[in-house]
Image (cartoon, rainbow, N blue to C red; front, side):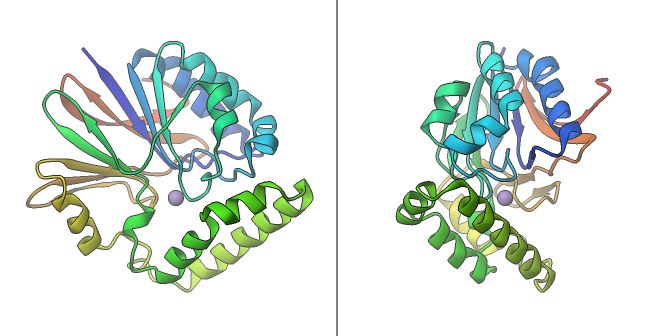
Length: 240
Ligand SMILES: [Mn+2]
């Protein structure tokens, strides 16, 4: 019997202690029973590089490390934590996976992705992503001093919040042509993604699209695949 948990968009930050505790509790009491845990991006709200951020998130790092003794943890980066690197992997025993990732269970296959690459209506976002996630940009950023990295990261966050205010909800959702183009390459496979924070299940003609939701301070959500059944789970401080 294999049990799989899939989560995304926790956006953990140092100042949201409640949410960090919710995640730790989830790891210790629920994910620990699973064979595999998949985190589909934006586990962290900001990641300024392993050399800085590992220290900020010690509790999370230790929790993942402990969990990895029982459960295989696969992490995909999102647009907020795309700088997760080798040291993070070493310290947590997580496995960094590329997007999209094909998850095969005995009855059904699922394509896992963060989801932002499917939001192709948002041209400005896609352009900025190409620049920010370019290997040269990453290299330069990781060699800047701490203060400057924090300053740039804050500025980018402010700009992103400002930009979102003028964008329509439709522009910030996935583009169905892009989704269909991707899924055509994977006949018979279902899609699981996060990023849009619009928890829902969309049954299309050829595939089902499961969207994970973001975590709040006192509630999270997960997909659980067990006995070939896919179920939605609410994660709360009181485990039921
Ligand atoms: Mn995201």
